[in-house]
Length: 300
Image (cartoon, rainbow, N blue to C red; front, side):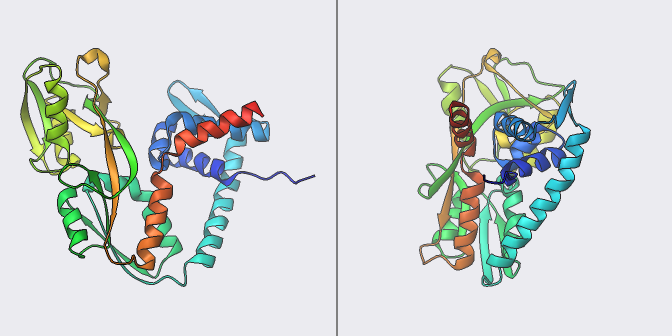
C-alpha cells in the first residue's frame, strides 16, 4: 500500500492564504481564480479529515488544526525550495535584462523571489516602460526578454496569459455614470488603454472625457479612489480601494488584454530560458486545469 503524502501545491495555497489574509489576495498572488483557491483548501481538508479554516463574516480564520498544519507546511515548502535550489541553481550564472510595464510587475512577485532562490548567481535587471518601447528594446537586442501587452503597436510574442479588463471606481466614492463619463486613463501612447475604451464605448454610443492621465496605475489610483473618475484595469491590478462596476452600471463589457513574452532574436541565454520557464509556469491559466482535475477526481 502506498504511503499517503501531502500535496505541496495545496500546502503552498494554504500558506498564501495565511500570508495574504484571504482567498482573494491569495488567488492574485498565485495567479489562480478565487474558486480554485477555495477548492484547494477544501481538498486539503478532505485529505486530512479536519477543518482547517472557518468564516467570521467576510474574514477567514484558521482553526487550531489549521494553525498546526500551517507550521508544518512552511517547513515542508522551505525544505522543498532549498532542495530544488541546491540541485538546479549553481550551474546558472550571468546577467539577465527583463522589460515589463510597471503595473504588470506585481504579477511576477513570486517569480522574482523563486528565480533568486533557484539562481542566486544570476544578476537580474528589470526595466519598466510601456509595451511598445520594451518590444523595440528586445528587437534592438538591448533587453533579453520582455513581458508586455500584446497590441497593434507591439504585435508578436508568445501569449502567456489573458487578463480580463474591468471598469472600476473607488470603493467608497464614484462619479455619476452620466455622459460624458469621466475617465482616468494611461497617458496617450501607453499600451492598450485608449483603443479599448474608444472601441467599447463606441458600441453603446456613450460619450466620455479624459479626466486624468498617468504613466501607471499608481498615478491614476488617487483620483479614482476620490470618486472623480472611472478607470479601466485588469483584474490582477484591482486593490482593496477599488470596486468593479458590473453590468447594471450600463457600461459595455470589455475584452481581455493578452500578455505576451518576447525574447531576443539571438539564442536565449540560459538565465533567459530559465526565467521564461518560470513565467510560463506562474502565469499560465492553471485555474481551468485545476477545475478539470477536481472534476475528474470527483468522477473517479
